[in-house]
Image 1 (cartoon, rainbow, N blue to C red):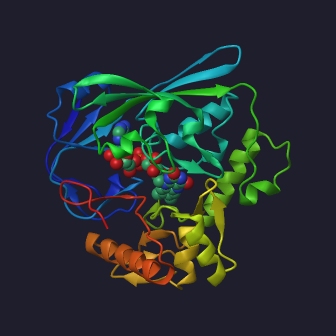
Image 2: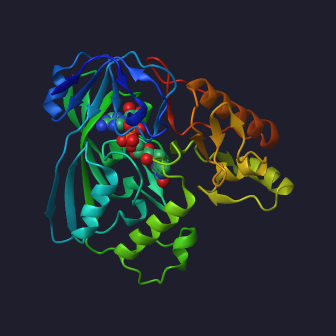
Image 3: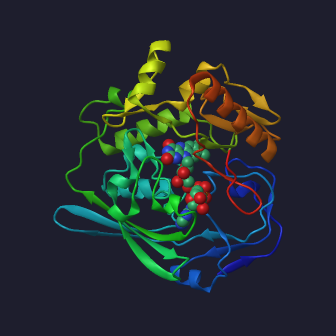
Length: 333
Ligand SMILES: Cc1cc2nc3c(=O)[nH]c(=O)nc-3n(C[C@H](O)[C@H](O)[C@H](O)COP(=O)(O)OP(=O)(O)OC[C@H]3O[C@@H](n4cnc5c(N)ncnc54)[C@H](O)[C@@H]3O)c2cc1C
């Protein structure tokens, strides 16, 4: 276990790169080490879905548990992965070993341990599709527990881990990949690939599209999609569609429709809109960026302004997808 002393710069520990500090930080390399910690801490992966809006006074715990183990049955590849592995490196390792399934989720920043927390998704696939079980340290009961996939209660950018406000620290994730693989090419630009595209071709195309569409946090600090795509009732949707016949939508089920938050923000002409150093990205309205000298207050002011304008204009409530942190806890918009 490595304990860092006080005053750790958070700039390089989250992709929005705000200039704040953490009081202390502990790096964990095995599940057992979690039992030795004082309970009051916040778990940090690679900080790509987290924005520190001020100095953080609670201890931070970074999960650096490594290792990828592959076994197989006649029908599946079963893979157990340490929560501290980097997500994209894991996807690449799987595909290089001809274990297919995660190609659509290539290049999503962050750690394997954070992937189940918000059930990461892209290009028509959510990670929950391949998760078999999740091991976690239960901070209330002080013991290691295993969640079956059903117990993870996955939803759109949601899971029991997200809803339980940090109670469970994920240490290991088990995946199961059927050997009979089928490409998922239904999403947007992927539909242009040939129907017999290989998993490696899909991965390359996903990387190409992502690099073209999304700002690289190393060049323009950001935390990916800032807001979730809002889900509304069919009735609300019909009323909106009368006013905006071109509004993009995706059916969730027989009664609910998902809207594209980026389209709503873009429709209000907010691309390039700035509060202090925080800016709505010029090319992708769903991404808020640190234009160079943003403060936490700038980010919160920008996010609240966007949220208010969308509410006023469309009657739709935007919820943050990113985790905004105050001095000790989550900050809500
Ligand atoms: C450019 C860019 C593009 C992105 N694209 C996508 C996308 O296409 N799809 C998508 O779904 N997301 C996307 N994201 C968001 C982000 O990549 C994911 O949410 C990712 O899973 C976050 O991983 P992390 O390790 O950085 O998590 P962090 O930001 O460190 O943590 C996120 C949350 O998970 C908790 N957490 C982290 N590790 C653990 C653990 N081991 N146990 C329990 N809780 C934990 C933290 O406490 C926090 O609440 C994008 C982000 C960026 C910057």
